[in-house]
Image 1 (tube, one colour):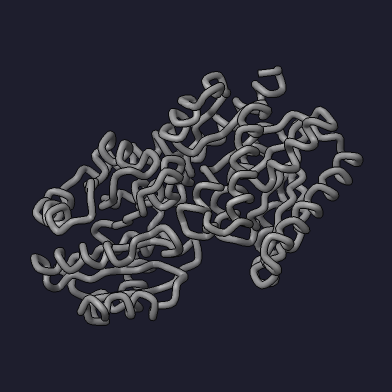
Image 2 (cartoon, rainbow, N blue to C red):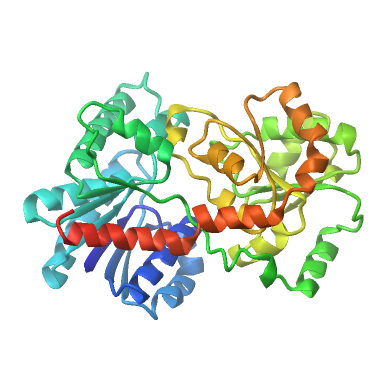
Length: 410
């Protein structure tokens, strides 16, 4: 198929390189699809990483047409970007005659829905999550503001339109799929669940180089092999609960006094040190480093288990943490909370760690009391789970199957 792929996320962002480009590469090379990719790039990231992205796309039938994301003034800047995306989509369709519009999330789907209605081009709603609810749950849209209240209602109405008019819908979780199918008039919406997948051949202990691992240990000052290391991977941002993860670490240190907390994050160390200081945790208990994507598997291999606590909210029914598949693929046990997408279901199904039901001292202590058993978990089960549930190869095959169903009229 000749596909117009619309993304309001940038390909020079880590998200684009982890959750868009790998799929398109394989859908192009293995299944013969041709892409025109319109994305919206932050200028500073574009200046740093555009050549890398061009190199990633150049061997494939993927024509990248980046536009620049505008941030100010709020709302009006987004309206301008929507105008640009719509204008460019029509321009490229006149030249290329697209068979399908693959729209990533809600902003892009505004254009896809319009073009389906006006030009009869099939539309794939790759929803990624309950976006409007995420904005509210995350505190970005305050519903007591008349402007944001109207915007929220607008996109919730659009959400229904997308679901009713899309030729197919991609959901990140079975939890969200079940939620949508419980809504009035939505029982027959065609949905394919594809979580945030991982290249399991890249995130593999078999690919580790011992000299590189030892080099990172030396660089980060990791010398005591008897010191348990708990890691956190990724940005902290709106949803990840730093204070609660630090509270867990306090309980953890009561049993493992020499433990270290490794943060592999682009966030400023001072953010973590400041929060820790308020809880009486000294700096020397932390190892904080940033990393390029290709460095993450090596850094993850240095920890004994990895933790992520995510705020529980309605919108999180549709959330699929990218780090979960990556950590499982490396055989790293997880310590996480229930109530987020399919996270707890996957951990329990593949015996991939421990799930807490609430953020209490008792819940933390239960994990600490069982930590020796966590260390003894069969890593092959975690790796199997990553390949079975999060494999990029399986995700690509599911996308290819959806494309085929759309081309055949569902």
